[in-house]
Image 1 (cartoon, one colour):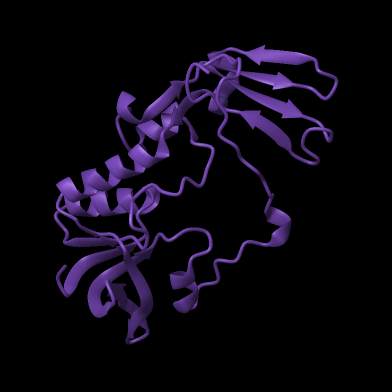
Image 2: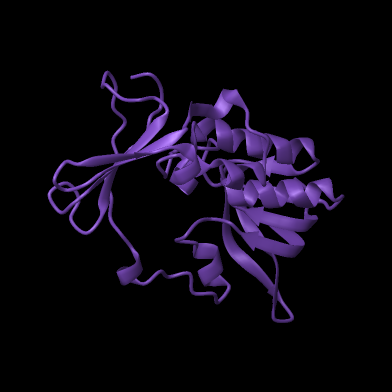
Amino acid sequence: MKESYDLLVIGGGPGGAVAARTAATAGYSVLLVEKRPAIGAPVRCAEGIGKEALAEFIKPDERWISADVTGAELVAPDGVSMKLASDLAGSKVGYILDRKFFDRELVWQAAEAGADVMVKTRASAPIIADGAVKGAVVEYCGSRKKIHADLTIAADGVESKFARWCGIDPTVPVREIMSSAQYLMTDIDIDPQTTVFYLGNKVAPEGYLWVFPKGER
């Protein structure tokens, strides 16, 4: 880890990893820092993504694809269901990822392109000079170090503390937030190539319930 880079990326999720990879591929010096000890954990989504959207950033690889989704099923409150083939399901057709391996692959690609990657490294304060963000103070294994950068990207999530420290309000209004609960289940009868969405207040008041296949059962 040097003291100065062209780009400092804070956060090792997909957004931060792709930004780091893109800049490093273009020949810029890049440092990506991730506060957690491992990339891709904990998983913070249902892991579904459309094929076209994914292809913009990375070539699909079976190593981090849990299921290849070819259709979707919608279940109405009265139990009537409708199955949509791939040409009608639109964004519901895609892949169910294994985010742990997917995120790590993106960060690995950034590293292969030339980016320095540091885990267990937390950005604790921005470096402000002449009214602009010029890097950050980072903490690693009990030590603190100033990392100067021409450009800093705060890719530390919707609750980004770093953006707030820089005077940017990342707060999402409560009316735009939906609460959810997610469980990983096994030994259930499912179609391993179909995502299922249940509608109705009995199963999910003001929302919906989803089943995303991660394998045969």
